[in-house]
Image (tube, rainbow, N blue to C red; front, side, top):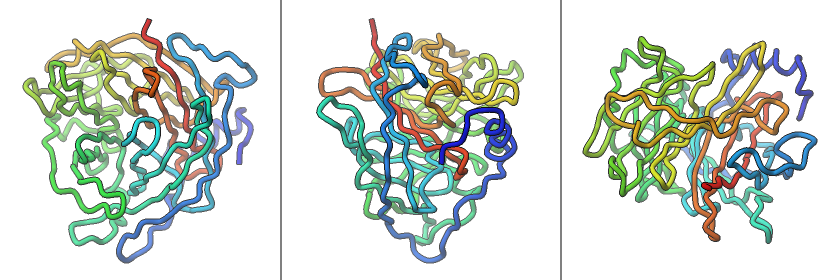
Amino acid sequence: MILSRGGFRQTVLAACAFAGMVLSPAIAAGPASVEPVEVSARAISQFKIGHDEKQFGPLEFVGGLEMTSKSRDFGALSAFRFLKAGSDFIGVADTGYWFFGTVARDADRRPVAIQNFRMQQMVDQSGQPIDEKWEVDAEGLAVKDGIATVGFERNHRVSQFRIDPANMKAPYRQLDFLVPARELRQNRGFETVTHANVNGQHEGGLVVVSEKSLDKAGNIYAAIIEGPHKGVFTVKRNDDFDITDGAFLPDGDLLLLERSFTMAGGLKMRLRRIHGESVEKGAVADGPVLLEADMGYQIDNMEGLDVWTRDDGALMVSLISDDNHSILQRNLYLEFILHQD
């Protein structure tokens, strides 16, 4: 259901989705099973509503999808990463679910459908589904060598899982996230979990960035938690934007997805390119804004990001939104080419 983008929708979003009043889906008891989910997708051909322009600064809009499903578990998509560039993906929902699927494309490489989508609840060490939301509020995800690293908030932790789409088990390892736990706000923990460049200064190590856990200077806590230069750093908080995901670019810069919501300004999203050399212990990382969009564009509560290279060499940026299981919000998939010149 798509409602007006006027004041009514903004008011309801403020009162419900961003105040934590939207109800999570019911969680069934018993062993977790893989649930096939049929996803319907409506193509999005315009990023700016009512306009056919494709270029937005260095970003070129390729296409997108508005995703719906009759399954009550579908939604709350917080983070995702491609397992196969532009095709097969893995993700986490902040209601405590794993999800897997495939982006189908037309002859022009535009996304046209989501296929083979399935979900599975996260489980404890005994293999039983975890039904406490505060224990499975999954927000960030990184993938490398068959291992999924997940950032959780509320019960703040960074956990590692072996990827098995047919049977995701409990984590086999917990990582030290270095940021003092007392500095992490309950619902503003690690939204970004990403691997640095293998050939860069952090040698492929994990980097985590919180959503809005602020130091005394008002900057956002983050940390390099693996590699030869481990340590805590911060990201400069500009305006009223919070960080919802990120991924490293081939040149070593860190691309961050940011979100803002105010009663006066409504909902906004932003992409910011953080200078790679500023991602280091003790530093305040910062960089320029590449794209900013409000509700005049095809956006919603944008929470997930991945960067990948298309078969023709184009550097791609893909985004997803979290609908908070609200009928007033949407699950979106958006895709852009990031031009480097």
